[in-house]
Image (cartoon, rainbow, N blue to C red):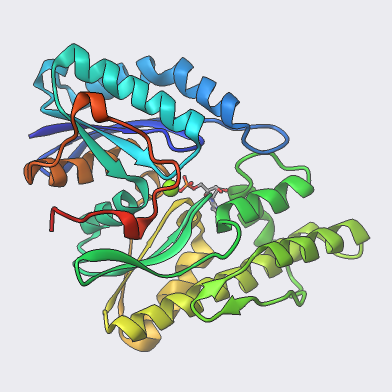
Length: 325
Ligand code: AMP
Ligand code: MG
C-alpha cells in the first residue's frame, strides 16, 4: 500500500509518502519570521504557495508515480483553521484528480503513532510541540491525556520568550544555543498542578526579568529550560508510575532540544524505563507521520466520504475514535 500524507496544521506544510510502514519521502517547508510570531493567514498563504512544489518533490524523492498512490491521508486537526483549510483543499484536489479515498488523521495521535518506528510498543508519550503539550497514553480503547498544559504549549511559550528577546519564529533552536552559554541558574516560578502544568505566569516573570536588564539572555534561557523541562519530566514520570508503562516516547518539535532529551533519559534510567525519540525530521510537524497513521487506519477500512471531508481545528486527542487498534 502507498499512502500520501498531508500536514498543514500550523507553520509547516509537509508531504510524506509511506509504503508498508516505511517512510519513502518526507518533504516539508516551514513558515518562519524575522520578528514576531505566526500570522495564521500568512502561514496559510505560505502553504498555498509551496504545496505543488512539495508534492512533486515528494513523488520524485520516493520515486513513485502519483497514480500508484492508494489513498490520501490529511491532518484534520487540531490546528489553525486557515492552515487546515489549505491542507484540506489540496487533499480534495489530489483525491479528485487521482480518484482515491481520503483518510482523516488527528495530528497529535500521528505524532505518537509514528513513534512506533523507534521500536516503542506501548509508551507514555511526552508530546511537546508549538501549540500542544500533552502526556498521552493508550488506555482502555482510547488515547488519553494524562496531563497537559493549562494555558499555552511549551513551543509557543519558548517562541514568545524568544520574541520578547527580539528573536523571530521559531525561537526554540536559538534559545537552546543561548542556554548552552548560560552559567547562572536564576530562580523562576515552578508551576505543576497535579498532572498539569501552567506556563503563562512563568512567561510574564521571564519578560519582567528580561526588561529589568539585570540578567543575561543566556542565563535566562538556561534557567527557563531547566525549570520548564523539569516540570515536563516530573509529570511524564508520574504518568509512567500511574499507568505502569515502561516506555517513554518523547515527541513534538521541542523534543529536538538535546537538554530535554537528556533530562528524559536520566529520569528513565532512574526508574528503569526505556527512552525513545525519533530523528528530528520526524519530531517536528511532518507529512510522513500523517501518511504513517493514515496507512494503519486505511488498512482497517477507515476513510471519509469526499463530500463529508472537514477540518477539526479543536479536535482533542481523547475525542478520537480509535477504531484501528
Ligand atoms: P511542532 O509544532 O511540533 O512542529 O514544533 C515546533 C516548535 O518546536 C516550535 O515552537 C519551535 O520553537 C520548537 N523547537 C524546535 N526546535 C527546538 C529546540 N531545539 N529547542 C526547543 N524548542 C524547539
Ligand atoms: Mg505538532
